[in-house]
Length: 73
Image (cartoon, rainbow, N blue to C red; front, side):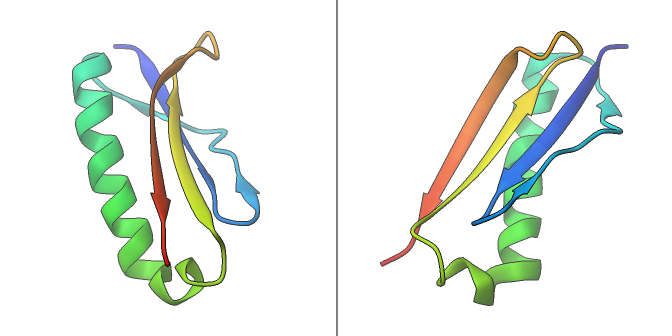
């Protein structure tokens, strides 16, 4: 199974160097939504301090599979 890496920029960049094995890009996109919700839940107070958060998923070749952006006003 291919490995996907979930990275987050929330004023700082948090790069995933372990990744997770998933069945394909569709599952990686679904997991990106879950990971985004978890990040907002766990670090929501910090979310209001920056103009934009970005979560992006890359494959083993380093290609971006998907990206989600969040902003608060």
